[in-house]
Length: 184
Image (tube, rainbow, N blue to C red; front, side, top):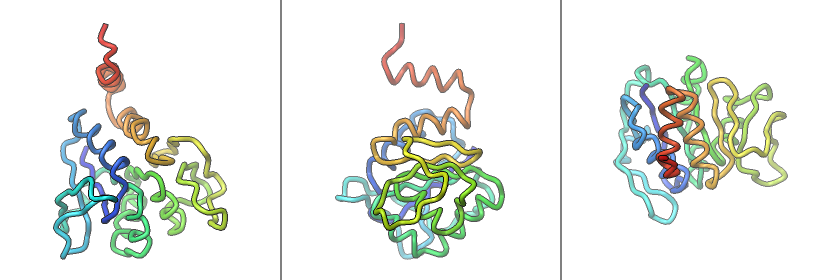
């Protein structure tokens, strides 16, 4: 399983940091790539300069099985980034996994990647925003190969639900027990 993490500057540190840490620590992905298509961008920085990560600008999108898009202020940049939106659409068109949290699912809805047939969670932005018919207030929602999270505090649950979806449930449950120090 190869994962592409699509990141823009001002991503939410908790959403990316928690999810990325869980994925790395579980150590079952064959490859995880931090990606932004802007060829002039060699690294991305989260809100408040807490995390700074090197990123790739050129990839073979066909080799990836899943894409993860964190939210934060970076979602505002994603809204205008046609190349990134096309990359996400590629995953939908190929029936691959899409993981998005916070404002990122709202961006996916705005761009018809998530439509009114999809159940999803997202950050509850202004009441003027037109949410999808099946948007809900759950921390995490799984609808087929689309996993969405509501907000930064949902990041741990979001990451663990993705692992449960992708990998051997017994191994994931053992990992969760280890994380909770429930070793007896």
